[in-house]
Image (cartoon, rainbow, N blue to C red; front, side, top):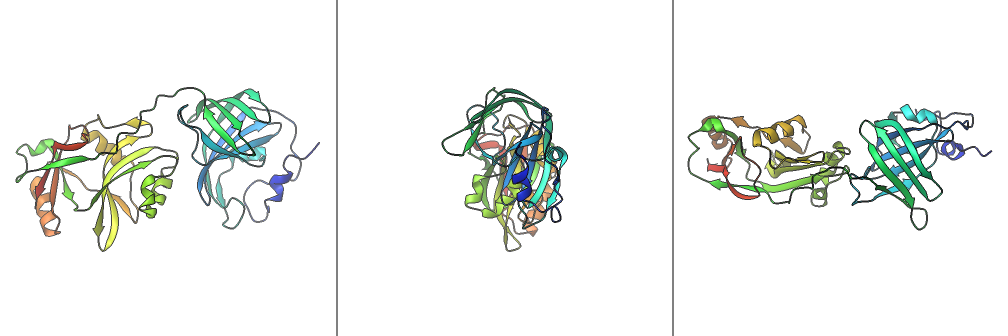
Length: 315
């Protein structure tokens, strides 16, 4: 019987990589375990591995598992991996095959509905990944993965930002508002899906931000401002989080969800916000040469276009 791990071993040097490199051929035992690993290599992708005949049959999925039946994702069939890979995580050295950081995204069991050279139908039962999927071979050597069951997922909100209405003075009921700096930058909505964002076409430095989200979907609202001579993306709202639209949630809830993401990098940060503190924030804006402040009603939903729930007050 052919050694199913021969190709796997040929790509790896056990003295140079922490990956498991078993010397003996795999047994023919058959189980039903699976693992999905998040792999930050030359490009972010997810490795789906299904136990079959003593090995883990593997596909690299650049955008992760599809969330609904409307979209198929590319799945690159790779070499079979040893069973020890079910629990492998760590840093594969740079320069080695697959060099980069690998973490376990999910693990569990699966049920096989069909397995052929051209089509694999299965049901995943994991903590994060569950449902019916099919891997199917297209022309040539390419494969795709399709989700066969529906999953409730809100669509991304339209890419139209909420805009403040200008007024000369802060509102009288300051306790109903959060007060933030008006940065004087350029507004930018950042959709993130599959560790990627279309905003990186114009701002390539946002690729790192998108990768840090892994498979988590999001849409962030902010603006690109020049601070200390460098362009910084300042975030102040979260419109979509992990399959759920937040536009109908009150601002206080969206703000709490944004802060929970703990976004802090060399080129992006979460804007500070001060509920009920109009005077000190406006004074600080004047001292820093900023154009003004924005008052945001804590109970307001996200309304694309001009809104009286957000107020721009000049310095």
